[in-house]
Amino acid sequence: MALLLSSISQGLLWAIMAIGVYLTFRILNVADLTAEGSFPLGAAVSTSLIVNGVAPWLSVLIALLGGMAAGFVSGFLYTKWKIPALLSGIITMTGLYSINLRVMGQANISLLGEGTLIRTVESFGLNKTNAVLLVGSIAVGHVILALHMFFHTEVGLAIRSTGDNNEMSEANGIRTNVMKVIGYMLSNGLIATSGALLAQNNGYADISMGIGTIVIGLASIIIGEVFFRNLSIAKRLMTVVLGSVIYRLLILIVLEMNVNPQDLKIFSAILLALALRLPAVQDRLSKPKSKVNVSKTTKKGGALSWLQR
View (tube, rainbow, N blue to C red):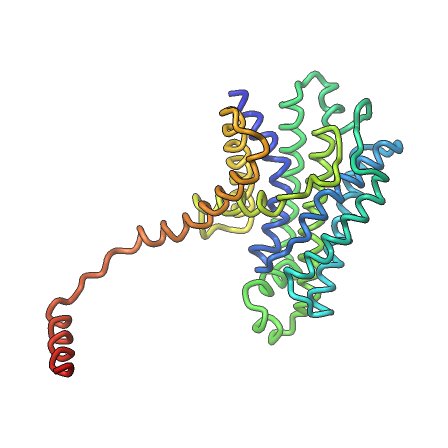
């Protein structure tokens, strides 16, 4: 039971990052690698502000704005400078490494003895797991509700239309480049928010904590989609949360088996590959096998053999 609660609490905090990845990967239909830089950016901004006396909740909001700024840069490079999506993300991610070091002033920052959102909730008598569970539930609930409302507005529908059919959207007068930039900003803002919350949960921020972020996000998305498909936007976001929780549960199970933590990245890569393969296997199994028309095959074979004489 403790293992399940721990995976749910951790999965909720990671789910915000996975939802951010979902916005570009599924809504905009773009592969964005900025997450590897915007995730530690959120952690760096939040921890630096807390150490300097800023309220933990305010540091999360400022981290959100920092992530949106990073998303704007990637979106600008992609839409205005016509740099491919993968390369624009790599460029921004590379630049963010130096920016994150500048923000923190060193490779890592400890929050030992500092107030965080988790410790504030713990002060009401909750243990660490339940405190993380409460903070994560509130954060994820607000994110899903806000995105559900946003994607039913005119701008939100325009972003979804741009991802579904860019050419048709342009023909209907939608400023697709602007919609893509907004999508990038929302995505990386959420990813940075997740980084800020996880840094407060872990009690530190590290310059390398963004490595493998995109793999975790994609794995959460694909795992959720294996179980549920063709849902409304709000329910699809919930499947991402479910996928994130399942992913964290699998990670914790592997750690309980005394697997070397250094091998977790290999496990994550294998898990992502299997998750990506599962939909194709499901489609193949769901399709009925077509019956071969023996008579036609025989006739074709006979004609072919006659031609080959």
